[in-house]
Length: 269
Image 1: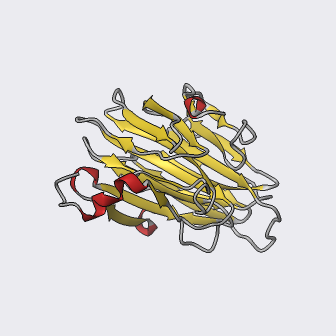
Image 2: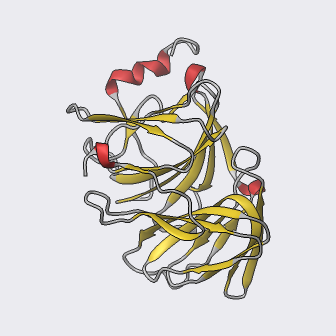
């Protein structure tokens, strides 16, 4: 896989649809699905050897795992913080929708199942909301499963770019090539209004470079390289992100050419 092959544009379908599968060339860690349910529709999901996080993007209904159940409701990614469920390996979840519902599922393998692992639910009031950046790269980050004791390997959250703003900026990477932790990542994009777009840049220090024009519902996998994002004027951009790799630590390596931005006046960059 080269960076030019990292955009996944899968038209929405009803039910559970695979978006990308680990084992595709350089991607070893992450697989993603989209789940779309009609009113009063029910679906199930289970993985024997992967842990999974399910993030509701819009809709309402319930998650049931064994004798535990949680209700969820989200008017939309730009209107309300997320509801999300952590599902350990070997556990089956039943998703029952009371209105039209769309969710994204992201899974990564675990070497040895933790028999004591339990499902965990995060509602909107439990989301950790952080303001990041300054000047033209201000954005809002929502941590869903990042500093928790539930996930063994997954780290999951959402980033919101206001119109005209950049994120994942100054550019950073986490591919292990400069002794940082080796992490693979995937972005799942939403855009408001939905006919808009964002620009996903990906590049390496040895000259490989690609820019994806991403649309609402697209996914971009990031096996390596720097990966900044720009939202054009007039369009809000949200991307659901998930990482997995050789350690569960969000340690980044910033492009040395752009570290000076941290010392620049707030409106310069």
